[in-house]
Every structure is written in structure tokens, then in C-alpha cells.
Length: 556
Image (cartoon, rainbow, N blue to C red; front, side):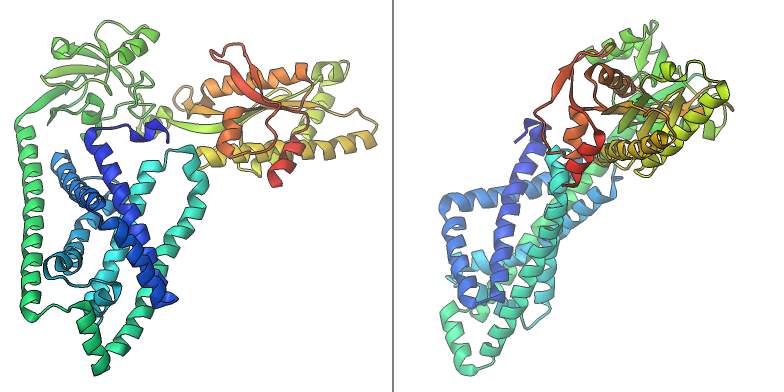
């Protein structure tokens, strides 16, 4: 598995590892319950096989250590948080994780503990009969759903940045719905059968003897153990929250004062970056890359207190050197003030709120299509300007709808060419939209060329460069007269790829990055590496003689 998935603190890695162990156990446990939908023998047969593994001394230790570590690290993470504000998905996962022990403790005490201490035969039948006459069946069914949803959210949050994950999500969603539904159906089916048998006094006595049913005194002892375990959990949760509150109070007492030149003066917790301090206090602070250290638009001049800041990291130093930043300049997203400072924001809006928001722009990973007409100058030599404009408009009328129909937007027209961007929800859908548009443009051009031939005019040939990369979208221009456009290396790469199509005699050059993101699994044997002017690294790309053929492969 990609080592990037295991990056993070020791606590994060331990939480992921223990969570995977518990989630694997839950999957087989739920499938085991679901077999009650078919036959009791299947249910108990799989349970016997599972117990042979999970109740081995080594695997038992691994399983319970994983449970204790996962629960303990969850409480530890709460105590270490700076704020309880979090995304909805993270908050839901935390809440579900805290609800699980309230039911899981009872389940463990009445099964594994009862088996080890009182020699109870804790087969599925015993568990189901124990729950069936009361509302416990509903709380344990809720436990099943809580565990499953919590695990699925955790798995998604861990793997969502992997390239292969987005391709498998549609199939995994079906599996995620099927497994708990299957388990609940098996539980209901087996429960009805067992309770019918249990209503028969003769069969009830046999069940009680077979399961070595606990005596009232033994049940009382089990309830006492359950209550003590729940009390221990509440105490642990209370300690975690108390640590969180104490740390927050301590940080407030150990705060730092930040003064903005031509701006307010605020007091913030130590440990936050200057950009985070600005954002937390609603102070406009340009950060085009969102505070990732990938741009320098958040930079400030530290007029007072610079000596108390640590030296720039190699990454920050390179970024500042690249823009020839003056002395005293620092990146607000990289510095964490521990002593009072006075900072001047180098990039600020000069207009109203809307202007500030639009001109900051946003960084996205999107597909870019660069298109140009071949032999335009030779074709139009000696023609009247009106005829040239008429031809260009007919040409664009023929091909642009193919781009817009696939979610593309023409960013700008450049004589006999254009630049289009596919601004969709994510990189994958953008890459696919770009591929579809290139194929549709090729088909639309073929139809237009047949019209030209019918009129006695020569056919039009085009070249297209298609690439996926990081772009910045925003308003560029003077206030009140700024146009929304895109900038970034991806635009240059797409333009250079389009230029290479002329020498190769192909209609399209599409980068390997875009093909990979789009999930294209067609013939890649023609993939070549191109050293493009103005691009620092070789770009692998696939020459496509006719983009319409690529569209046919995608459809297949």
C-alpha cells in the first residue's frame, strides 16, 4: 500500500491500525449474523470458525489491545484538540465513536466475560434469546449500525486521497449498504425462530441447559461488571474533556498579541500560524493556496518582533527567494508567533468585499484544453477581413457547443484558437469531461468539414492539447474592470502539447496525468515523453490521430 497513507503522528498511525483490526472483525461478525437468514447451521458453523481464530490467545490479545488503543486514542485526540469545531463528517464520526462503548461494553460483558467467568456457552442463539424479549434488541441493532457507519467514515477519511479509492467508491457504497442490511435480516429471521422455540417449555429447558444459562446471582454479577465498566468509560471521557478545558484555559493565559499595520490588534492562542490568527479573527488576509505554503500571497513584513520568530524553513526560504521578497518578509501560513509582533499584510484588497473575494481566486486541479486551427494564415491569405471573421465564427459555432455540453467553459479566444477549462466538482470528473469534449469536438469538426466540402471549401484541421494540473481561478485586472480567468503551469503545458501536434500530424496530445485521473484504460502503448519549452519536467503524453477514436474507446 502507498506509504503516504501511513504518514502522520504515531497516534494517527496507531488509530488507523487498530481501527482496521476492529473493522475487519466487525465485517466477519456482521456477515456471520446475516447467515441466520439462510439456516441456523450456517450461522453457528461460521461462528465456530471465527471463535477458533478470535479466541486464540494471541488474536484475543491483539483484538482487545486494538480496542483499548482505539478507544484511548480517540479520547486522547479529544483532549489534544484546540477547538471542538470540526467538519460535519469528522464530528459525526467522533459522536458515533463515543456512543459505541455505551452498548459495546454490555455486549462484551454478556458474551466473552460471561463465557470466561461463568462458562456460559455464548453462541449466537444465546445472544439473540438474551436480547429478544426486551428493547435490548433495538439498542444492539443500533450498535451494529453505529459501528458500521463509524468504520466506513474512518475508512473513507483515510483513503479518500488515494487515486484508486474514488474509482471503487460506487461499488463499495453498495457493499456498505448490503452488509448491515444482511446482518439485520439474519438477526430478525433467527430471532423469530429461536423465540418460537423458546416459548415451548420443553425446548426452553434444553436451551437453558445447552447454553449453561446464567443464574440470577450470576446475572447480577454481570450487571455489576457492566456498570463499573460504564463508569470507568464516563470517568475517562470526563478526564479527556477536563484536560481539553484546562489546556484551552492555559493557552488563553499563554496567548500572544498581534498588531496589524493599518488594521486591528488581536490576542490569539500561541501555536496558531499568523494566517490562522487572521482567519479566526475575521481579518482579511490573502492566501491564494489556502495556507499550504505553495504561494507567497499571504506574506507579511514583520515590522516588530521578527527577532523572536524562528528562522524560515527551507520551503519558506525558497518561496521567499523566488519572489525576491524584501528583508523582514515572512509567510503568514508558516510562522507561529510566540511573542508580540507587528505585521504588515503585503497583499490586501483595495476595494469592497466582493472585489476582495473574487480577486483572491481559488486553487483547483482541473482539465485544460488548448485548441488551434491548422494553416489558418495560408488559408485566409488574400481574403477580406469580413470573410475571415465569418469563417472563424462559423468554426467556433460548430465546435464550442461540444465543449460547453461537456461542462467546459471557454476562458478566452485567441484568433483562430481557444482555451477552455472544465470546472467540475473534482479532478476526476474534470478529466473525464475534458476527454469527452475533445472527442465531441472532433466529431463536430467532421460534420462541419462535410459542410465546407459541399460548398467547395477545403477542410479545416485542428490540433488540441489536453492536460490536468493545478490552476488558479480568479479575477485579474483593475478593480471594476477585471475579467475572471485562469493561470498556472497547466495552461502552459496544454499550449505546448497543442503545438507538438503539428509536427506529429495528430489531432490531440493528452497528458498521462489526465488519462490516469480519468481512469482511461485504453491502449497506452503509444505514450511518449515530451520536453516542452518552458516546462521544467518531461511530460508523458499520448498522441491521438483522431480524438473521436479516443471517445469510442472510452464508450467501450
